[in-house]
Length: 279
Ligand SMILES: Nc1ncnc2c1ncn2[C@@H]1O[C@H](COP(=O)(O)OP(=O)(O)OP(=O)(O)O)[C@@H](O)[C@H]1O
Ligand SMILES: [Mg+2]
Image 1 (tube, rainbow, N blue to C red):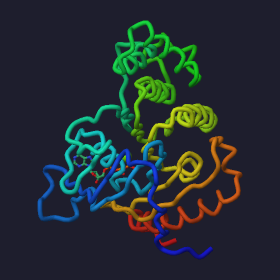
Image 2 (cartoon, helix red, strand yellow; image 1 turned 180 degrees about the vertical axis):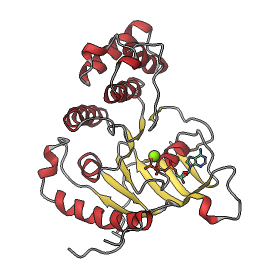
Image 3 (cartoon, helix red, strand yellow; image 1 turned 90 degrees about the vertical axis):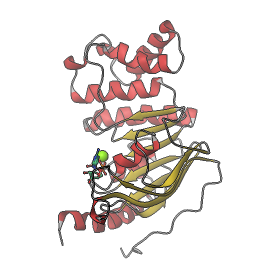
């Protein structure tokens, strides 16, 4: 199937912008100032509308996690600007819920207590926070693990506890860095569907980093594909599949396969640079 090298960007969302990323570049401190090769992000611009689900995909090391770190206000941009709700990000913006790739739970607290922290930060009283934590853990299939400590949980279970904690915070925007990567295929379908139900009900904005093209299409309103490092935008794809969606069944929808092919054709080109693979 022949594809243009860069897909046309979708028309700008008509809803108000939740996140605006304008000409953002990032060079980590300690990198040589004149050495372009140390640039992590290079002139990245895109917007996330209120209630929009944007999946971000790109080769390892292209700056996806770095981009989320910038939006979360935990690291400053080197050039350009990021706005959340119209305000330039210079600290952690209110209403942001993040789940980082290496997210850690507090080892001395149970699963329930870890999740309740999210609800407490959202202003819930301790009783309500615990009820909410219990309900979320049950929804994500961890009803039997509420009183276990992180060291007693599998990697996939810990990841679900961390996701529950982020959801308990009731953010208006989710920044999620490969939140389902530690989950086995079946759990992933279950958790993916639970997560979709919550989002489709409450309509938060989401920036969702994944390495999984099918997952990106199944979940997102738009897929942003990044170039190999330093990360730039290679292409954007509007995903017009109907909602509500099913994490697994939507892969059978008409149009899914075409999107998969188009995204892969861009990503494969970028991966070739990284893996030096001419196949
Ligand atoms: N704290 C840091 N200090 C210096 N360089 C960093 C730091 N964090 C990341 N980098 C560098 O920035 C680049 C982008 O890293 P980042 O973690 O954002 O990539 P990524 O796209 O999330 O990769 P992956 O898919 O493997 O998670 C890499 O070259 C990495 O080595
Ligand atoms: Mg990463």
